[in-house]
Length: 318
Length: 282
Image (cartoon, rainbow over all chains, first blue to last red; front, side, top):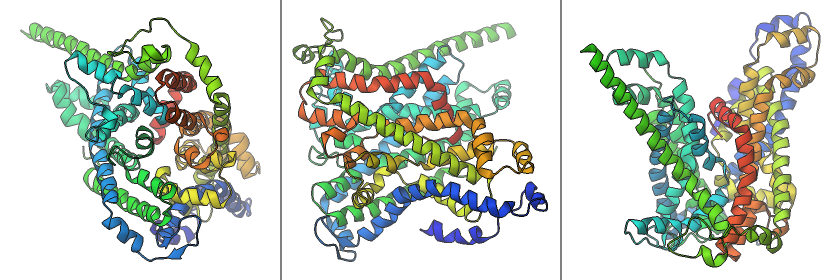
């Protein structure tokens, strides 16, 4: 909302003249026609986008002030939905699960992705094959991957089969409240690392080779080059990867829903905020609670994004 | 002295290359095992799939599971639904994203900045987070339980507009200037002149949108309450909740769902990577 109102002023200013402004003499109506066509061409896309993205976000604020079960009449309750959430154990469990999930998954996947990308950037043979192997899980369906991992995490699944070789008696991963969320974390890291690896690879290719050449002349070791050149110069890419990772993990839904059969169990150990929102509509019929949780999820996402921006979003200095 | 130092350096580099390759091979194996395991399970009869400790290579390759699930559940129907939804979403994005991207990059009009900032803002709102209000809107618009509901909410992507804007910005402007001299209309310039020049970006956009819809789980979950409208991912999950002990069936379904994705990915790998490199996002 703030974005929309603050940007009104520059938008109302006349469009800048470009090089072809001189053609106005030649064809005076060009600009007016352009203005209409430009607007008409942008409108369908932006309208649909608004209807299903920013519009719903604003609508959530409105709905959070009402009590509604989808079937009865809405009635205004002020901020009491928020009051309910703040005192609800389940909501805080969901927040804790979601934040824990993000704080474990994002750093791990970022480091794994960076390491694989740096290794892949070494001109090794079969580079294309490796890139394909690491990237493929990221383009597969989250539903299918969740089902495959359910079978892997089964008490008699392949994971416990591997563990039994080294003498560990594995738990029933998804039925144990101590392990269920960790199991989803591992699956998520496995899925998304390859995607961010590709992002890092394109970032690595933008680092000028002569910096490496110069440092090699000065006798820097591979590790020193990694720490003193690669990591600092990749900061814009890292920033992007961490932000996208944070936004993605804070909205985690599919995996929790599928692996817990929609319950968020065992003992709410895999209930995330978005899963709880889903349950508020479809299990409890409490639209107001769900909308209030949606608003709080925005606040949480924005807060974490701002912290990350403060920390990583500075321009790089050579 | 100089020589020996150079030699040790060369040996060390040799060792580190082998070490890197070993690490990458291990990693690739970790990526590969879940898929291999699901393929292996899908070829076993139920009794063999539950043997513990697990057996990697099935005793006999049993293709029965692949035949049976087509009769157990309307899998063909689900594949059809997925295809209809994905093609609809792809067309929507190709049309809307490229027009909007062109106008934002090449045309100057009042409100352009506002629209562009709006698109940027919408990049930051993931679909899952607005699930509740989107569901209520879909319900109000009568988009539940029909194909439009599976298509329209994904028919425009902020990322897609961004990608196309970037592509059109990179075109040289002299071509268009010449067309302006000739008095060509804007839309004709877009359609006949500029669009053919950004075909690679259009292909990337098509792939991103197709995959987005094909793999989507949440939107069908919200929209399709009855099995005849389920897509493959939703159907497979619902199937799992019904047949949760029959892993060979489930893995056969998982393999069949993954095959189209794998084929598209193998053929168009370069364009996927390109898409990430140019927009830096999915």
